[in-house]
Image 1 (cartoon, rainbow, N blue to C red):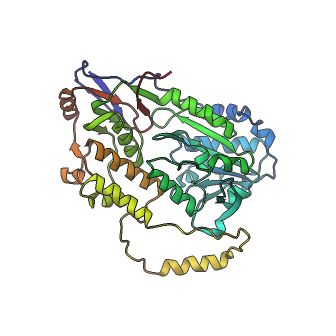
Image 2: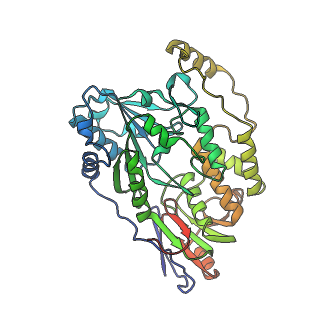
Image 3: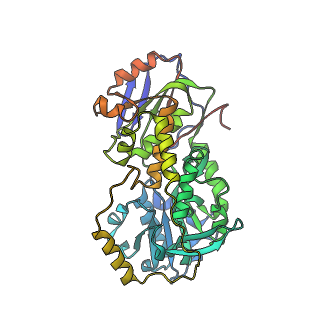
Amino acid sequence: MIHLRFGSTHWTIAAPAVTNVPLRGHPFPSGVADIATILGESLDRPVHFAALRRSVTPDDRIAVLVGPEVPRLVPILTALLRYLQEAGVDLANVSLISAAGDPQSFTEELPDDLLDVHAEVHDPALQRHLAYVATTAGSKRIYLNRTAAECDQLIVLGVRGYAQSDYVGAADLIWPTFGDAAAVRAALDGAMRPLLAVPPGDPATEICWLLGLPLFIQVIPGPDDSVAEIVTGTIESVPEGNARLDRLWHRTLPAQVDTVVACVTGTGFAALARAAWTASRLVSSNGRIVLLSEIEFPDDEICVFLRTCEYPAEGIDRLAAILAANEPAEVEEDEDVEPLDEAEEDRRKYDESQEEPEPADEPLAGMSVGQIVALRQWLSAADHCRISLLSKRSDERVEALHASRIESAEQVGTLLKSAKRYTVVADADRTRATLGGPTE
């Protein structure tokens, strides 16, 4: 018998134990209950940084870059803002900045006494919201979110995770996430070579030093929407965050199997695509991934794009061609250029809002960087092997996504009984699973 958990669903399935190849690694982490205490202790003893309460003054302008998919985000932000209050910081001088396309629903859930904070969503295409920072050693001109670039103390809050062959959730949250349109393009280019979150030779770490001493709050996720650990410090604390993430979430498999059951506990297509990509690294070519989640594909741009592709390889080629044909405009080279005043900018935006939008030639229009990367991950997995997706949608709708539909635990059991060798990946959307010997 094997036990499968995804979201709030728990299945027990009769499956042959002799063909089950278990992943190797440390026991899965458990979540911490007292977010305020663990965050406060981390902020008082950051790596290579003085206690935050001794590093800020009441008049300091503080910018908090909020990364996507941070577990227990509202309790973490509540604890952080109360910590700053206790340090004497005026919350009217604190800005919470989300990435482009990332909704700020957390602002509606903060306690009433913390609502003096300023909330902002980064717009990489709006020049007056960008500031020139410096030119890197590689002659790359760096533009960042103006609020972040001009603050007295920058705090970067992100969940640590994996982007295939790299780690994410630290320096990459500054650049390219909060950079200009050219930086966003660099992230997309990185996704094509192949599926790296940031392209080789990126200046993200150098930018951190150019900004002074950003304070990183690295959230190490636990199961479901829990927090296992928090690592706080300068950019020099990132290797410690990587090590703790690996200790909790890195799994190995001795050799490829022909069937992988991937359980997904996250929400949204991005979590499903990450799980499919992770499982595809463990399964043999033309093997099978069984994706179990409570996620249903929405009828959005991703579904439209997938339905217009006859097979996954065609989608990969089309995706690369579309990105190559849509270079974003560089920010004006002169960093002293005067931005439009607010009234003129508002008039321009109003005029544009009254214009009839031209129909998009490709369904890629309107997708965020995260959606495009997730789309690329899904197509890569579907091109490598067969995907069986738990879904309540019709067979035709699922097949249009380059997958076959399953709807019951009995069907999963049947697939496992026919497998020569199979493995189960719990929390596959967060796990880093690789082929090789046991983890250290």
